[in-house]
Amino acid sequence: MARARTVLSINEIFYSIQGESTYAGKPCVFVRLAGCDLRCTWCDTAYAFNEGQRMSVDDVLQQVDRYGSPLVEVTGGEPLLQDDVYPLMERLLDSGRTVLLETGGQIDVSRVPGGVVKVLDVKCPASGESEKVEWSNIDRLGSRDQVKFVIQDRADYEFARDILTRHALDRRCAAVLFSPVHGVLDPKDLSAWILEDRLPVRLQLQIHKHIWGPDVRGV
Image (cartoon, rainbow, N blue to C red):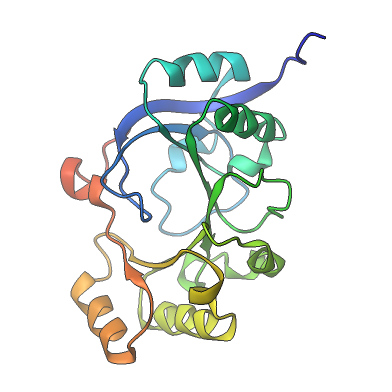
């Protein structure tokens, strides 16, 4: 039986060094889908809101194959807004790759294939989108998944610390990531708060921005 044709709106596909998560530093292919229903104040990929070209899943896989990387991240925008992202992730898993999904946390992740490593970005108050968090997603985290908090100020830190404690996130998933908004919150301050409270989290710096700069696309 012929495989049904699936089509996605793709912003960009590129090969770079993974800048975030516990996979930071590893070569990775990024598949960035277009479109997002959030407007975080610190968003660094606003160009993905509307810029995209239609590609079949077969075409996406063909481009990914060119790089020969065992690690692939599906990101956005918000990738879960597009229904055909699920067969894309299934096909990537079937090819034997490690697949990461970066999602904003506002959409139910129950349809995400079990083999995918979910990186769930829980929005803090300074993002302007903290009211849209789908809290039931925390119950859907697996032992390989990761939770990320992008932190702009002390209020964001206290929000993230409270969520971490209330939901025992460090026992639910592989890592809890506290990431300062690049160029806004000094990592030294965030480090001091983490150490003072002895939090079981990982400080995350976006290393791609330190390598190539904060405004360079395709890295």
